[in-house]
Image (cartoon, rainbow, N blue to C red; front, side, top):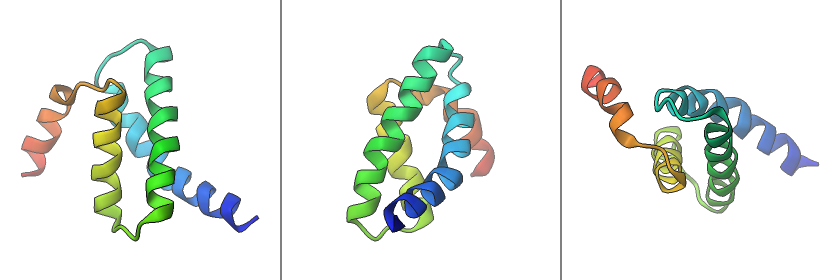
Length: 83
């Protein structure tokens, strides 16, 4: 039961952030959904095995999303603005 609660917390924190980033790529919705689902599933396994900061988790998720098909070029304006 605790694992379900922990996953819900993980999902509530990172799913909206990742969904917003994924939508910036203007991919078909079905592809965007698949990237999100696969990213969060793989990310949860890594998150559950390691003690990571929130920033490290977000970086890990962005990298997993890239592996799943997210074009990082769509994130350039965000990173340039934040720097």
